[in-house]
Length: 390
Image 1 (spheres, rainbow, N blue to C red):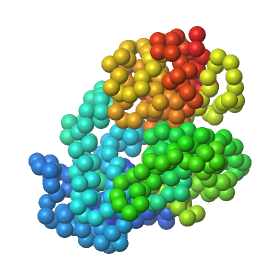
Image 2 (image 1 turned 90 degrees about the horizontal axis):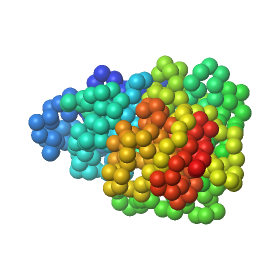
Image 3 (image 1 turned 45 degrees about the horizontal axis):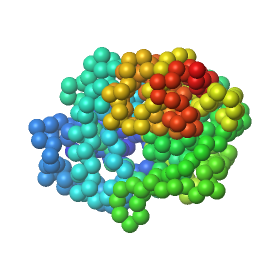
Image 4 (image 1 turned 30 degrees about the horizontal axis):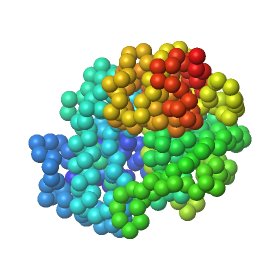
């Protein structure tokens, strides 16, 4: 009922667990973990309101073997993290839980979330149908109390560059697009091209008790690089190793704690990010600038929304303008013909999903929700990272 991560396979534990297991077996730095496999989910299919006594006992033993640390509990679904579809951000991850009772609840939360409407909507938009009874494994992974973390895209072609996005604290800030992260481009010769983001908040484990806390980054550190050039180079080297082991370009979530790099997740890149822009992000004039998120150019009405409660205002053909998108915004990708966000980077979930849906996106446009008027005709260029109001 419990599988050590070292023994996990994609067939029994999903693509996310299978990839981490392959990296661990190759000696790459992956946090200690175990997996609750598909078979356990199937055994609880009739009633998942509580884990069986046998599974709870095995879970307690496995947590004790890890040293009873704070852990991250992550879904590993049968259909996610493939070369065809990432399902980025659609399934559940529960960070900073501790003890058998909390992990029990987090596992059941992962199982239940796989049947949420937003997950079915994602698959219907991308493939035309949603899995009726998705197989879900769950990874229980020692939490890395990260000083900095982020996402890395390994080169899409031989001789290409590695793309890294980084911010302070734990990974949700970068993957969820709630900050505009630093971006590093590391060439095949090791040449580094950095572009600093504006990192106003960070996510960390709440001290003394479980769960996460969001705090403001001190003003004097908001525009300071979250990682240095040496760390960016080490990350790029690890990324190349991971891509070789897993047989193709990888989208990797990573963390650095106490100077040590950890790989938290690795999946195939479903659609490469546009190249970094060459424009000045602070340029004046009517054109607003951000990060190229998804290729394409489009002129259409802007629909400025402050929350998902306003999604009913979005009409087919509109360009969605919002602060950032989390999985609850998934229905918008079926209606909108383009996306503009106020925060985030090209490796965030919003940009990845936009690329999968083949709609243009410009990410991290400062003050987009106030600089753009609701209903205003705008032209977005997701390749160049520009938004031009009419």
